[in-house]
Length: 115
Length: 114
Image (cartoon, rainbow over all chains, first blue to last red; front, side):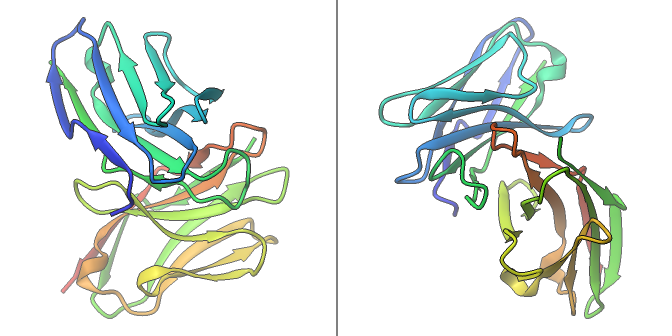
């Protein structure tokens, strides 16, 4: 158990809908990263938050957005869902934002299925 | 920009045999490299990381990796495979342009044959 929790574990929805994925980082970790794992794209970085502020964006679609709240949990919002958004979404947390030796600890993921 | 390439999407070994999973990196600066393992229906678990302190890095579950700058490689090895090692393994390099995220390879699925 990494200490990172993600809810829900599974999510099934229809095209055009909007969903929210939730992540609680390990106690004491200020950084939250979101990654998407799909069969055709592999593991891709989406976005990084540190202590409530957005730090970096990766291959995140405009239909997707995220935020980190004062209690440090984070939510990833996916809207106007398409079939191709079906994937496993991981959250990872780490203590700081910029230390190269810092370790990212991954949650169990949320499996999103868009029908 | 940093990237990693994993050679071999599937590797099969017999129980008790040597495990060798290959990873080559590309980086214009000294890289920070990681190996993660993903068991079925689970998240990624850190096996080991290279942070320039030592070229031979020992990780959990008997795995180790050696950083070879001349070969731009960071291959993962284990002397004797166990059935419980069957999983998918990902090599990753940290972005050092400011985002600090990880760039992952495409993964290698390890099968252990009894």
